[in-house]
Length: 246
Image 1 (tube, rainbow, N blue to C red):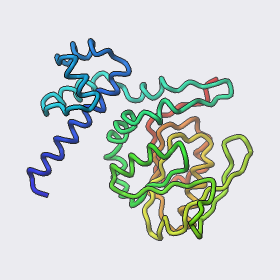
Image 2 (spheres, rainbow, N blue to C red):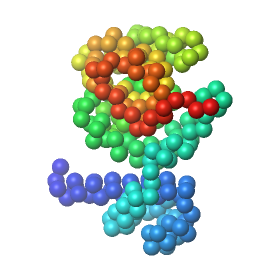
Image 3 (tube, one colour):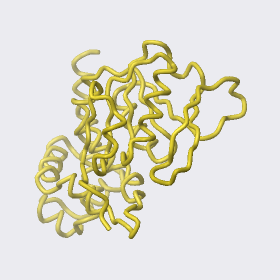
Image 4 (tube, rainbow, N blue to C red):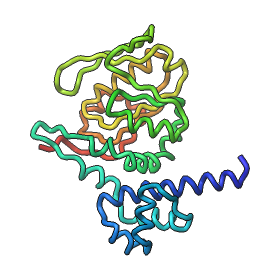
């Protein structure tokens, strides 16, 4: 790619990242606060947030620098976790926030790219938003395991797993051929608690004769899951919660 085109692409990515940061900042700060801190008019910030215009390079850089100074992404994720009396929590405030997930994936990209994955694998459904963004940034295909067989697909690979501490056993399916022999698989999920789902994904890859090169998890709860993950497989965790809070 010619240098000018490369520079233009980098500039556009930086501007889009600045908008993602602004949208995330808007959840915690008023336009008045941001206008004062960034020395930019409120109408201009509003147009950036709504995606009507892209900021200039110098403004995009300024926005990113400010956001990275005031935003603690780990705290941002943790404050959205509210446990119920059974020790479970609603993760929709995290997995529905695409701007938050995009920024997290960009932060983790250097580490994830070192594994040279050829495909990303997750389990339907909550892991799909994060896995999609990871696959997009890595420039690879994504496969997700479902709990039911789809009409029109003739052959599947199946693996059974237990749902958390419920004792309920379900099956996960991927179309046969979705993972090919010698594919390098990065498993991505939003949460790991017992490790049963990730164990099932590992076994699906093994049955397909692929190779798991790593696991990336947004939130790890406790340590129970470790007994299901071979020590030879690297696991990258964005945040760790020591135990279920009640």
